[in-house]
Amino acid sequence: MKIDVLNIKGVSTGRSIELPENVFGIEPNEHTIYLAVKQYLAAQRQGTHKAKEKGEVWRTTKKFKKQKGTGGARAGSLKSPIFKGGGTVFGPRPRNYDIFLNKKVKTLAKFSALAHKANQGSLIVVEDFTFDAPKTKDFVDVASSLKFGRKTLVVLPDYDSNVYLSGRNLPDTNIVSVNDLNTYEVMNANTIVFLESSLSKVK
Image (cartoon, rainbow, N blue to C red):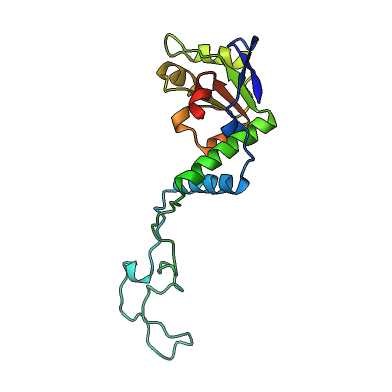
């Protein structure tokens, strides 16, 4: 699959580049994409939820009313869940939500997500660029020329502090290097912008 290479003005350079067939030309495996996205979202959960149960509530254990003659059910402690301020029954406890996936499964999921976006025509390849200093206005000019839409993912060949700092404040733009690319970010983006040299690192 070939795709035109654009410059930062959004104009074709007259060159085209062949997308790596072993990445963008495979048949997307939707189940591995589901597993990888599920793992990513599960890892975002802190798991620090906690509710006090009957044995953890700080209240007296003294029998607060007599056994019989009140017309109500027997009760021996205000820690009981049926009373206001009592413990919670089977309340949430701190836990780890991490899900394990094999490395090959995660790689297949990432390649499947990229292939899926390529089939949708959601990829843009731009010749390499950088900035002399971090400046959001410069990045906005590039985004405007390339017509970035909502949820645009920019993939750099390596971490570039000037480019990253210039674009990190834009709400609908996410900037990552090839090494940090993950399935969730690929699937969550409407448009993926690859710098030309980053494609050689994907494969």
